[in-house]
Image (cartoon, rainbow, N blue to C red; front, side, top):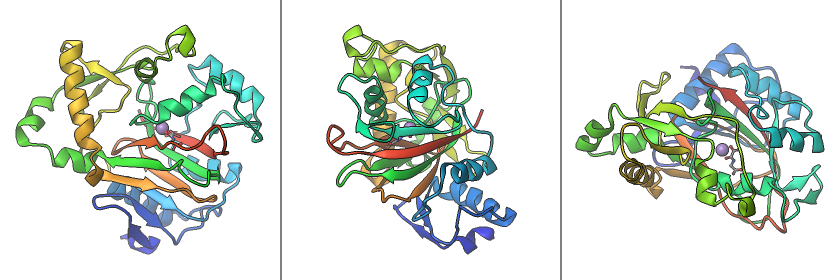
Length: 294
Ligand code: OGA
Ligand code: MN
């Protein structure tokens, strides 16, 4: 199997791997690409230390994994922000507390909302018509302490559910909303930022089979607002239970960033969240590309 050539070191009890033997700045041989996809199917999170890719190199590598999301779509405010920083290319966005890579964001800058939203367990773009398959982050600037990214293995978590609960949730459908997380944060109110979105609701099964591994996974991100056919409280209490189950420490991997790290994660088989740091004092800047799923 090609995956053996990667120099894999597993990082957490049930998932996540470091891959040391590839230089992603060079064009990948087809067998290496196959191996990377196999590793993502098996481990959900792939950490590539010391890559230091340019934006163009990150785009080129990301596009090998599939078509890229345009992060502006559906978000007029984000389009405005893009004009302000140097990323003219819609296939790239930034996770950052900086304006134009320099000064820290103003206290009232709406971009701070996206940082707070990232601190809730989620999977990227499940509230969009096309969700994310993979997210790729490269670290440019990292704070001296904090600002890690934490992942949870929703495949291992599904396996560990009691049989009767697996049965109960087998054919349920979650309803994902672009405002669910912002509502939790109070950001829909004028004094909370007045967040708006042009997207409607998306229906997604609570349990799916991963096409690469054939294993079942739980889809319970914080953007999942409720469960179809259930009252809000009944659906939400079930979602809280499942999310709490899936994010227990035994299913987690926490990545402490070093500049130059590139991390790819599978948004189907994992949940993730940003960890707190001194965002009013210390710069944190990561370059982000997203491969679309369906
Ligand atoms: C993301 C995200 C987490 C982080 O880019 O989708 O959730 O730690 N990032 O910045
Ligand atoms: Mn995210």
